Length: 306
Image (cartoon, rainbow, N blue to C red; front, side, top):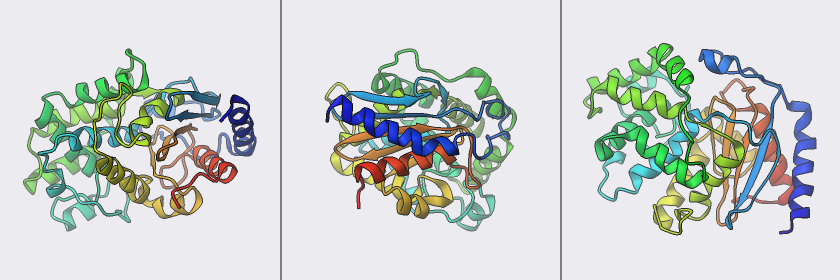
């Protein structure tokens, strides 16, 4: 597609999204995120050939939060001898992403790797695999995004730690069922720093090409098999937007993963990686303006997995 085509599409996406910029509520239960200006919006499209097209605040950095869960899972799945699926299931939760009740009812096995307890287990597995779960994730994101300085924001990481009692409860509950391999404080240190990585829409869209290329990295090597990439995208579609996955499949029709920093990653397999950002969240923890933008993009381009 020509540059004019992308600019035309992005102009329409921005126009459609403009009335929704600032809608929702920032994630003020994490103090550092609560101070983010909600009247910002960015959108980026990365094609599988590596070209990036963007509009709005697409170079402004934001906290990845739960979007990192996609990449930690990819790193664990790239180890062909992993046993992560004995420790976390692959079903939509139907409950809040930090539900203690559901976790206890199901004997310390989280419903899927994209809610908090499941992601903590994946980080625990990655720590066992590598000895440095955060470092392995950061290195992957630096390479795939093209930004060698990409890192966690230490203030946000501290804010996560200071307000992380719910995550501690989840991790210790899983440990009581024998579903943690490493000391809980160590795992959570990696998990909090992981969630605090900052990225722009353009960088996130480039990193997402790992999945759009069916597991192939920017340097042409394969991190994942085609089947493994397909399975991660299937989980993004069914579990990637907390308890709104059905609504997102209906509205957008793409594998998506959201984060409470307001970002959202979506994949058009074999074609594009899309990144949208707007800090204001809806009641289920997904960005209001990012969802509108992704829906506009799929409506305009007819890009969908359905």
